[in-house]
Length: 283
Figure 1 (tube, rainbow, N blue to C red):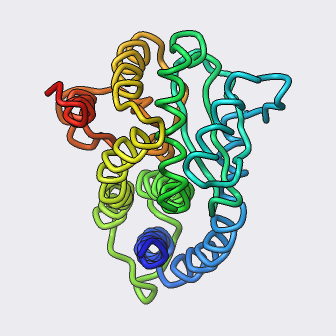
Figure 2: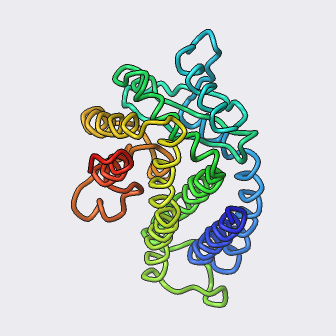
Figure 3: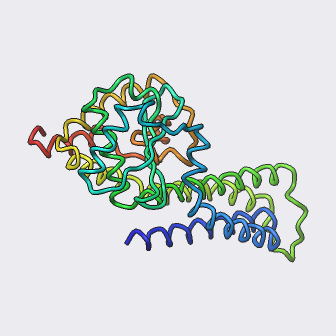
């Protein structure tokens, strides 16, 4: 099922990439975007985890460097029947975490340096159990691919905006030019469409990972208490993160109210906590 989701996601994002290329450069732009899409489809499958980790300057933890974290991950991986993933730390004070990798045997778990400062051992286990649930459900590849491809689409869209401002790239009418208005429209819509695709796979994944992670740790309140703290502290300590990768984190690193909340990559923390508390009869 996840293999089909991955294929559909790649196809949808590839089409968006080609449409943006066509809007910017006509037929030549579409061909160029298609070539980029082919290269990125290959690259995101094999190297997307390395790209994301490098983007956030992640450092791999040895058992000696982060014994508490690696011990928790090892114990939870054993309970869930998973291979031991690599463990990374991001040099950011804002508390957060994510999982990446194309398969359970090639997976990695990353936490920010700030998360270890505010969570108890049990709460940290709740967070890491959530991330291992993503690995166990084999949905981390989908999120990582969405991050890298949506980032590429957004980058091309920015090129489209500049092209519209300065009169396009001089393509002729025979190449399918649609004028400045069309160029602007195609520059604005694809990032929104890419985000909608991310939302389609993200919110449901977060709820499911909460529940599966709670079963792995054996206590839903570990994660429920952790989510409350992460929500509070992440609001006070901003995180340097891109919109394209925001959906990968356990709590949304990007904050916004009003219209922005409609496009949040995460379900509300209150609802997530409520569902976890229902597992122990507290809600």
